[in-house]
Image 1 (tube, one colour):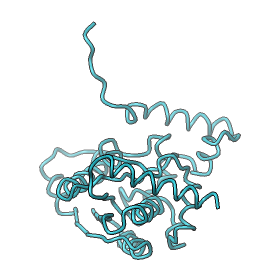
Image 2 (spheres, one colour; image 1 turned 90 degrees about the vertical axis):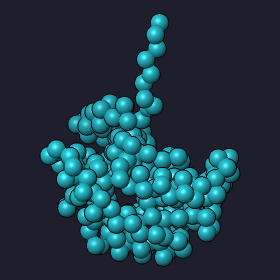
Image 3 (cartoon, one colour; image 1 turned 90 degrees about the horizontal axis):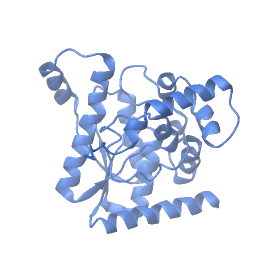
Image 4 (cartoon, one colour; image 1 turned 120 degrees about the horizontal axis):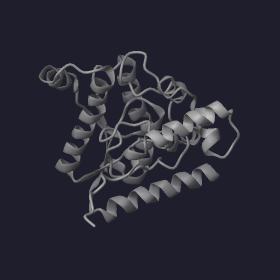
Length: 237
């Protein structure tokens, strides 16, 4: 019952944010993961046919594209697909050679650009799909998946997102799959973070974790402060 009440509160919040902004609806990217699937389900409940899910593959695994379609069908949200692979490849050819991180971060930034194109075209708000665990650790691309107008699951720990997923009818395969931003083959969230979401959630909820785990989380939080604040403005004294 508490989970259903939380769902209802988020749905009303989405409706309020869209109305207050004078927007017609909302658009979000669907990756085939649990976070975007839950956000899509919430937007569908809040906005009906004025919720749009974009599937934006960019050298993406076929399984992720299939899961995104499957999740969209499960929650009943309308979708469009835009393959960003040719754009990504062309852009890389115009840029000097870069390391893996620089190249990988172009993908979420291209997706953000596409989401805001649709938002401008159809008077929609861009919905981000980051959860509280990712936000705390700074596990998002600045001006990429971090670029959004509203974050409906931004106060939910990863485990709480999964709890909502069960109630919202997200397919079990998606709930159980290893979280990944799909930045490169074999990439996983937990592999990059150097810790599990279970450890992160326990720490953020005030539970006890080993000292080395706490240090790792605190390092991630400290290193990502710049991602979570507006650009600094020089003030002449």
